[in-house]
Amino acid sequence: MFIKSSLITLALVMSASATPLVGGLGTAVAIEKRNTLTKDDGSFDHTGALEQVVRDSNKHRRNLLNLERNEGVQAFNEGAHIRPVANLTTSLTGHAARQAESLTDEGNDVYWAGPISIGSNKQPFYIDFDTGSSDLWVPSVNCTSSTCNGKHKYDGKASTTSARKSGQFSISYGDGSSVSGPVYTETVTVAGVTAKGQYFSPVTQLSSSFAGEKMDGILGMAYPALSQFRQNPFFNSAKAQGTVKAGVFAFKLAKSGSELYLGGTNPNLYKDSIEYHSVNTGSGFWQIGSGNTAKVLVGSKAVVSNIQTIIDSGTTLIYGPPSQVATFYKSIPGSQVYDSKTGFYTFPCNAVPSNVAFSWGGKSWTISAANMNLGRVSSKSTQCVGAILGHDLGLGKDVWLVGDSFMKNVYSVFSFDQNAVGFASLK
Image (tube, rainbow, N blue to C red; front, top):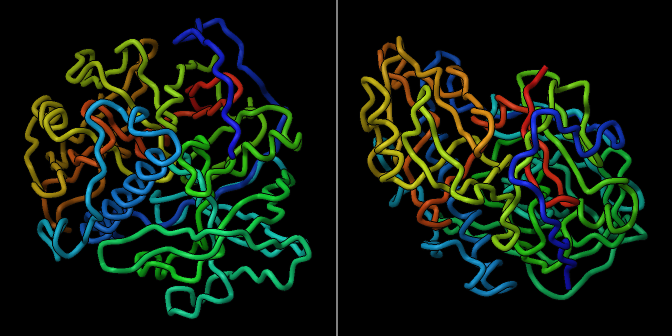
């Protein structure tokens, strides 16, 4: 069984004079970003965006199934529900059918990936680090589909630390494809941080939605309650085994110089203090917004209030309940519905909002105009597509899923030690 982190009471917001929880104790992982939702001509990649929505929908459907099995439905947010498997062709057609690791921006801000190794012989993989899930999977040598072509594949026979376990790992997709495979334990290393006996799946089936992507698989960094394996995720294992000093990791996501920092924070990447907010640990997510303090602002006006927010590095977009997102866009001059099924909106390209912010009772953390804009509807259009969309992922009636379009504007800190998420200004 997995180990639950003990709940440590934390003030909702630390004062401006507060010092960081930790700094300079860990190791950095260079990460890169991958496929963008904006084409080279500046237009919006609608098909790519629909694929992203399908993937996010099915990821969080699986999260809720795992949470229900591990903790029971009482752990669900109010109004949360398990939605049917999302299907690109029918549901979302719309208009179209050593301790720091550098991260590479793959797909122009769609996800953030970096290197890891698995096994006694350090088999290399290129992984999406995802705070919105809790399990690790990579392709297996037994995956012979075209989707696995060109990807690194795990070979258990080549590693002396490989151990097959009972059970099966699976995430279903609406086109009939899936990510699925057996369950193993192995030695996993990220930037010199090692977890022995780490549960993961070398998948033998890989959904076609991953075809053509540079990344090999996903490493989940949310709470154990979301684990399909019912085991500790990699970072929790590393902390329990003492290979990181602190149960804290942090992200800088940017066009260049992106970094995942394991075991602390990197003071060279942010300025001033970190503003921390307590996590609702029962949900299994990095969910903040206790005391009904979280809100979305346009300028100084709170247009949506009393929300919960899940901070998810594994998604590009920002999702909100459709009715609340409709209220939000009423405050954006010239905005209009672009795709009513998926929930995308547009606004005039000559007036991209630069004053949209989230607040959790402390500072207002602004989303830049560049990060609010996913591109023109077409290369010659005067309307641009917004990064905030109104789409029900089943996470709860007042729950927003806040992805990289927000995280690129801040230094983001995730603390299992304090059960808190923090934000600081980038240098």
